Length: 75
Image 1 (cartoon, rainbow, N blue to C red):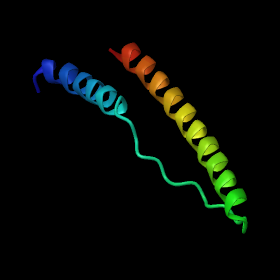
Image 2 (cartoon, helix red, strand yellow; image 1 turned 180 degrees about the vertical axis):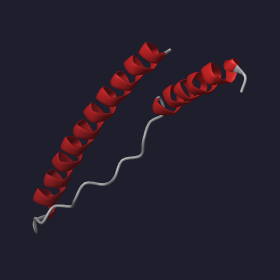
Image 3 (cartoon, one colour; image 1 turned 120 degrees about the horizontal axis):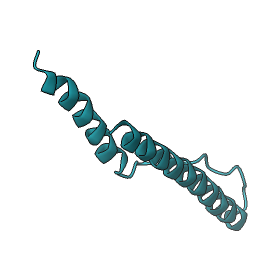
């Protein structure tokens, strides 16, 4: 096997991984509230969505930062 392929294939996979990692992910919906009052239910769901979004966003940003660092280290 040509030695250039030994270098090019892993490098190409790292670059592809960095590109795919930069795309935003679709997130699952948080569980709905058990409140019976419509106003309380709306407020509880809004807070639940906000907490869930912030949790997913922080995880995604940490993962992207870590993978980006490892990608540059490997390159």
